[in-house]
Image (cartoon, rainbow, N blue to C red):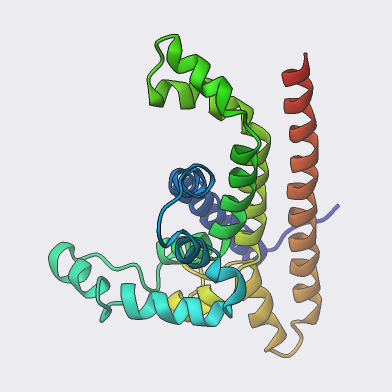
Length: 230
């Protein structure tokens, strides 16, 4: 039976906390952005789409540095947060969650957008003719129809957050018990003598979590589709 060491438990707990906060916190904004891209036409739509998907093509270190410049203690917004509220995101697990959310955001938006584009607008129009407002129509008609895409986006975002390294270590550094997630702990162990065995264990844990997330997508998506067909 595999027994986790305190270091592994700490890194696993922190990674799960950061990943869950990243996907849950960014989900509402992801749905809004996906709806805008799927349903609206406006000047600059291509630019808006490019900005959303930019974290996919940028090196994660660049994203982390940008967050440090904007949200760091001397950053444009971070300095104001520190001065007015005595609150800092840099070098905290909350900052790690924001870094993970930014990197994983495009992977959440894309499947939701594709699902929205596949919904027949006539169904929404029918709900409105029956007296449903825009919000109620979205919650009772659109949202159930895009559930598979929404679920896929959540799990993919969660899995990507678990594996995030570059932006996290650049923005919040490597602080044991605060920002040392699984990838950062794995990297730290490869830099010390005799850390290969522990690094391999963390690698296997990461692989198992990622595989479980992908398996969950497949199982839950099939169940949702089966209920929709019933």
